[in-house]
View 1 (cartoon, rainbow over the protein chains, first blue to last red):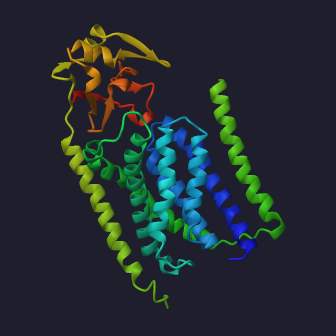
View 2: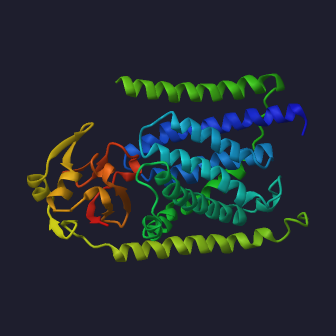
View 3: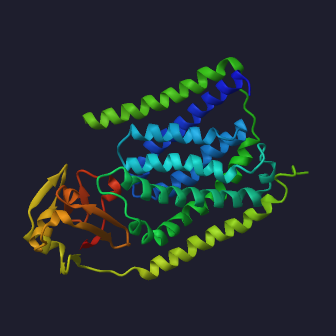
Length: 219
Length: 135
């Protein structure tokens, strides 16, 4: 990969990671306040949406791990809504899990073009992202606290975790086919506008999230 | 024609999707069948209603939440050397967390039957608490 391509990819990681983190902080917190199934919606629509669309556009393995790190870090700047430490860990875990699930597929994803396969991939990805990140947070969050980690607390709750992933799986059934359909729409951005646009939008996401945090803390 | 390294891989995805949906559906049935509508809260070996808890324990505030101190409930149960024990808190849906005595000193149970700790993340804020075990 040439230096210019690397920089372009890095800007893409910042853009999509920031958009993902922004949606988790602002939209995810609102869904949580409204008592809606925020975890399933955020995983199957927003997280999987940004992860898949970035894989379709950039055709690069490893990018989604970077996006998870950016989005998870941004979530730490917004300590509201549901357990924000759990959310940050879950987001980072989702980036890694996505890479593992999609690793063996070709970079142009041509084998997933038929709707039967893209819908099935949506179900598998959403379910594994949801229950995988849920399990990881149940293990890692206690490690970072004074309470400590006890495996029996996770084991006894596994049926609930497996059950709660069902909604995410059902939403995933439609998310990826829609994204593949949208990816056929070509929007070309002039080369000279690529960096100002990507970095500008990413910066805007960070400013809005941090401003929201400051306003809540002052208010 | 698919590349050799990807050929046929996609055929397994619908099967995996079916397995994921089946696991989710069967787990939902299992969880639903396991749920019992328990009215009382068990603390160590005795059962209380939330009203009884509010009449017996020391009232504390954590941020805007008013509740009964968890440490006062444990002491009133006559637990000797409470700092040498661990405490497992279980919700109606089976969600459970184990904490130390130092956490219990910073925890309350609210009238809405929610456990809140000032020194632990929200993953430890347990709704519909049903049991506090001393280990």
